[in-house]
Length: 230
Image 1 (cartoon, rainbow, N blue to C red):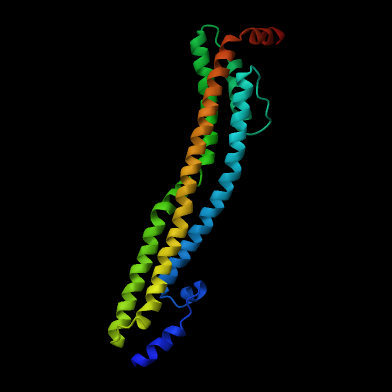
Image 2 (image 1 turned 120 degrees about the vertical axis):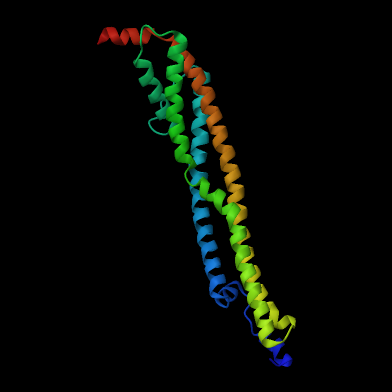
């Protein structure tokens, strides 16, 4: 290649995001597409978790407040409703021979089981965020390494080491790493936040479950009246 034409070639190279993608090597393009798809999935999960966990935190606060003041949560749906339904079912199934401690443990175990099922539903998608946060930078780095290898190959073929020859290929390669970081950073931050939120929701519910289980284990009169009415 004539060195005098190298700057003109570089000047004609499109360094916009779309241009870097369209002019990239097919393998680097595949890496970019994979990372963009990962970003779309990550943001879908992030938005869905923001909405669902906001509702879960609200339910946990209401559950803890009502139980602490001696009330009984009466939600028709949601985590609170399923936890209370499990408690009431376990409370109705009383054995006269069991001690109060055994009755309390059985009621609390039923509530914790219902809570665990709901928390598992809330955890769906979090493993993907963890995987995206850890793997995306390395996937982008693979695209970068491949692109730089192509740049060195271009240098060898053209016998020209000027920046004008090398810059386009390196720019395309580094763009893959940039996309990898754009995918990884939100995924890691969201995973850490959602994990913390889930732990807080679980802690609030577990505290309320202990209080409600103790109260239901003491209250046998209502069960006796219900049995007599039947």
